[in-house]
Amino acid sequence: MLNLKSTRRSFVSSLGFMVGAVTGAMSSARNLFATPAPDPKAPKIIGFGSTGNVYEELGVTTVINGQGTMTVLGGSLARPEVEAVMALAGQHFCSIPDLEVAAGNRITEMLKLPEGYTALVTSGAAAAMQSGLAGILTGNNPKFIEQLPDLAGMKSEVIIQKTHRNPFDHQLRATGVKLMVVETADELRKAVNPQTAMLHFSNFANNQGQIKVDEFAKLGKELNIPTFIDAAADTPPVSHLWDYANMGYDLCAFSGGKAMRGPQCAGLLIGKKELVANALLNNSPHEDTLGRVAKVGKEEIMGMIKALELYLKEDHEALNKEWQRRLEYVSARITKVPGVTTAFKVPDIANHVPHMTISWDASKVKLDPKDAHKQLREGKPSIVLGGEKGQLGMNSFMLKPGEEKIIAEHLTKLLRANVA
Image (tube, rainbow, N blue to C red):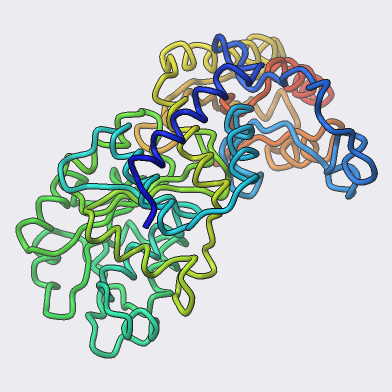
């Protein structure tokens, strides 16, 4: 077995080396996503990658991302320090199960998780959902682990609120379970039976369901059934990384490649030690498991630790001010176009960062918001914004420095071209 104390000391030593060796680290919120100076000692790239833009070499258009940490756009941009640690990790071999345990111990210390809790680095929040539930279903029984999604001999139902159904519950259904849909606490209590394996909560739908996040955890304790919370995009605030465990949730899933800016193919499963251990048994690198497809490499595991270390030290208030400043810059320019208005908000749950909606008087600007979105996306440079219900929308926390100016310029030009 790997000596976990020795592993942690070696890892901390490596991190200390990287702090001294890696340049281009963020010194302020305005340097967010700044590109570090090229390393003169880096090997010269010949062939693929020699132009500096590997996407253009394949004929794929890169975009200015004003929509946020969308997986379909690649999530977020990993920090230079994270990439450097991942490069270090790629230079050696080790036991992945032992590494997962050591990484979980380190993350537990960093987050000051409650007694009896630990963490597991997964290939994303969706993988954490699937493996977490699989571990609840199978325990540490090898026969059950190998036979999933055949649930013979296991519990077979998961209770979920109607408003919490979403495409990501496909990961739950992949284990073979049946989702039992309820709307109230009384309906939930009545739905519980000997086949009930877990209660599942989608935190971004907290405002939509009748059973709120804190009450849901209490119901699990009352009924002695494990509770799981999907909190994939629920950082910031940073405290959510431990809030739900302290609230009593048995398992919590987070994305690593969103606001934490860890590896895109990384996530966190935080929860009770036994349940997390069983989740690992159902996950890669173990063969003949449902989670074998959700491989997370040694590089992503180490990168996730580094990303967490940096995320915990950030000045989150300064970052929010910078993100708001960028939106206000765009707003100040586009609202000079007759009929154009903007509004600001911070979502209560998920992607809890400044957002801006952009709308206009259709009698003054003859442009359908869907067409505006399409023209920006197909323009040069390609700009991706969000929006719904006849509006455009954007946030700025995935923009590189200065990209807000490009958005303002192109959006202003587009709007002015369609003034009646």
